[in-house]
Image: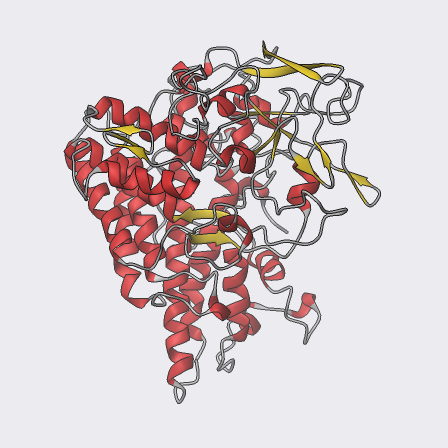
Length: 565
C-alpha cells in the first residue's frame, strides 16, 4: 500500500511498476516484480525501455489540461468559456497552498523518482555486448533519462523557484525526508550541468523518423538555453546582471548554430505535420480530433457531438495582432491615403495572417459554413449553453476543416520547444546584451524572419516588416514581447512570460475585453465590451506557485514561498 503521507519521495515501487509496465503482456501484472523489470537476462533491455517510455509520458502536454482548459486561459490571452473552473483560481485570487489546479509538485517529483529508479536499476540489465547497436541504445537511454529528470526540475523551478535537489537518490520513508530547498541558482546550475554532461551521449541530429520524439543533443542544448533565459529574466535577475543574459544568449546561439532547425514555410504546418523542421521537442500523441472537439465553436456538430468551445480568446490578444504591414492597429489606420489600414468597422481585414490561424472570429469558415458569433448567432446563441464569453474561440493547432463535413484524426503533438521560440528568445537576450544593433546579425534579423514567415508585407526601408530602423533597446523589447505573444499564443508561453518579465501585476490588474457584434439585416456593428470576470494578480505572492500545504506540513525544513501560509 502507498503511504500517502510520504507521497512526494516514497512512491511505492510496486505501484510504479504497474504503471510503467502496462505493455508487458507475457505475465499478469500482479506477478511483475522489480527483478523481472530489471532482468539481467533481458539482453535487449525491453522491459527497461517500457519503463523509460512511461517516464516520457510525464513531459508537458498542454491541451486543455487544467480542468478542461488551456493554461493560457489564466493569462490575458483568453478566459474559460465555462464558469467556476479550476483555471480561474489563477486569476480570481482563489489559488492557495491548499487549492491548485496545476499540481506540478507531485507530478514532477513522481517523474523524478522514476528517473532515479532508472539510474539505480538500469545497470542490472546486461545488454547484449556482442551487438554494438544495442549497447549504444543503452547509452542513449541513460542520457535520455537524465535529460528527462532535468526537464522535470525545469518545470518545477518555473513554478516554485528553488526546490529540493535529490541527485540520484531514491528516498524511502526510512530516510530523513526533511529536505530543505536548494536555491534557484543551484537548480539552474544543476539543469545546465546535466545538459552539458549528457550532450555527447544523446542521439545525434537529425533523428531518424522511427526515433522521432526521442531526446537528441540539440534538445539538451535547448533545455539548457531555456533554463538560462529563465535565470536571466527580471523575476530571477532583479539586479539585471548582464552576465546572465550573455550566458543565455550564448546558449541560444548554440542551438541556432546546430543548423538542425529552421522556420517552416507554412505556419499551420508547424502544428499539423508530425515531424517538421521547426518543432524541437513535442509531446507525442496519437492521432485525434480532441483539440477540435474541445475548442471549436459550439454550434458545430461532429457526428452527434457538439464542439465544446472551451477557450474564449480576449480582445487584448486579437488586438495584439498587427496589420499586414506589421504595424499596430492603433497606428496603421485606414484612410483615404491608406486604404489597407485597420478599420474598426471591418476589424479583421488586412490583418496579420496568423490571426485567422489562431482565433475563430465571426465570419471564419468552418465545416462548410461561416462562424456566427454575433448576438443570437449559431455559435453565440445566448442561451444556457456554455459558449464564448468574448466573441472568439481558439483556432490554433487545428487542421483545415473549413469546407469539411466532419472532423478526422490529425496530428496534435503539443509543442514543448520550437525554433521560433528560440529565435525570439535569442532576439530578447541579444537586445539585453547588445541592443537592437544593425546589419545582418542584429536583433532585427530574427524578428523580421519570424514576421516574413507569418506573411507580413516587406514594406520599404527604413520600415521593413513593420520594424523601423533605429529603435532603442526598450522599444525593441516591447516589439519582441508582442511578437512572442502573437507567434506563441496558446503554447503555454504567455503565462510564464508575464511572470519572468515581472510585469504580471501591471497586465492582470485591469479589465479584460471581448467583442459584441450586432447583426441588423446583413450589416454588422462591433462594440468592444468589458468582461465581468475577476482578473487579479497579488504581487509578489502570485509570481510563484505555493508549495502544497501537504508537503510543508510534514517537512519543517521546506520553506513556503512568499505570501502563502
